[in-house]
Image (cartoon, rainbow, N blue to C red; front, side):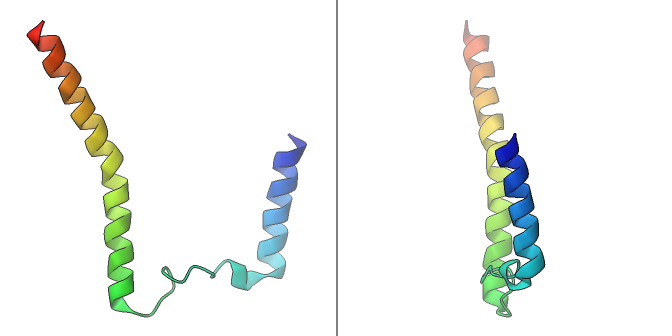
Length: 68
């Protein structure tokens, strides 16, 4: 529990004393439209992927159960 508190405090101190560390992502804060578009497409893909996987597994289980 003490380690979690220490890490939380460390993150707060880093963001207070090194505000540039919060903007360190080269993709998120890029001015290029191509980079931002790729970032958004990747975000959408990674958001929908678990949903599609769960649906596919659920459908497969449903089909297996229905056959028996």
